Length: 366
Image 1 (tube, rainbow, N blue to C red):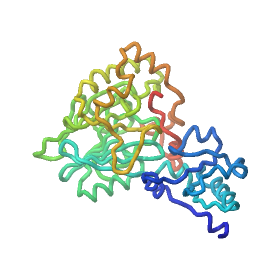
Image 2 (cartoon, rainbow, N blue to C red; image 1 turned 135 degrees about the vertical axis):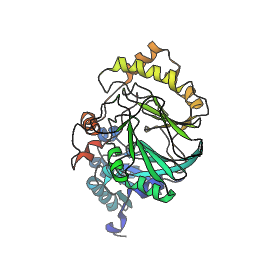
Image 3 (tube, one colour; image 1 turned 180 degrees about the vertical axis):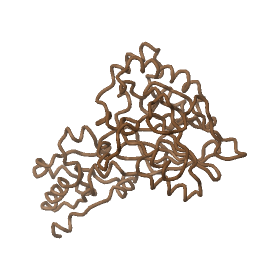
Image 4 (cartoon, rainbow, N blue to C red; image 1 turned 90 degrees about the vertical axis):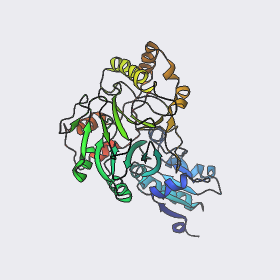
């Protein structure tokens, strides 16, 4: 078999499907260790390209090998090295940059509504479509609008409302673009300073998705990650917590350079608004980290009762919580000031704006 026959490419969408099988491929990342440490696909093995010639025998002989780099060029060279030793492999088309815009979804019934969770695998970003009868709303949409529009068509829903949980710092919001594409109302918390027209939320405001159906989504202010952080509550069944609480941690309080003040606010939001809810309430966050297992057909979500014991920070008193939060924030999201400025409407979204998003989300306390 010739070298050309031993190398091929694989699309990111196909890789998502393979990762969710019982026999996932062997992921070989040929970037430098610091690049991989900063942003990687869970389960990856790192052999830098300059070392691959000497270390190719470390690869399993019976595995399907996918070679990864930033955009694909180094991975192609790595695949050629492997082919010279008779090892077949596939290059991830577009590399990590393409992985950043790879999505999948899962759907289920909660509180009389259909909840569709859309997972952006390369960013750990989560957005939601919540629908009942003829209408739906979208929470924290990404810039790629096709998936939301396709879901609405599939379920014969009209998108009536678009909501963001807060002024995002790690990725660009698609909320304004989705409003423009659908004519939906855009609801936001004015405690975060947006410089464009929107319908201002007040605490406890609710909307009905379906007349005659006991279904409302209540907005509950939970300042801390940002002053306008908002939790949307779907009856007694679910809460969409944004960056207030995740499955593995809580939102970082330092991005507005008022870390201690915001940490106190976050503690009170958690203890006054989130933790008093019932154990059975399902928590749907806006992000997940690399330690969270993501599988096809399974929500990235957990009942609140499980999080009470899984997250030690929730058991701390206020002083200890603030000290912990301040001691454990690490690197801020890349380009976060530009991203915030664009999402707030202070800066135009240019043709290369999406490049600002590349890299992992860093909105949790580590």
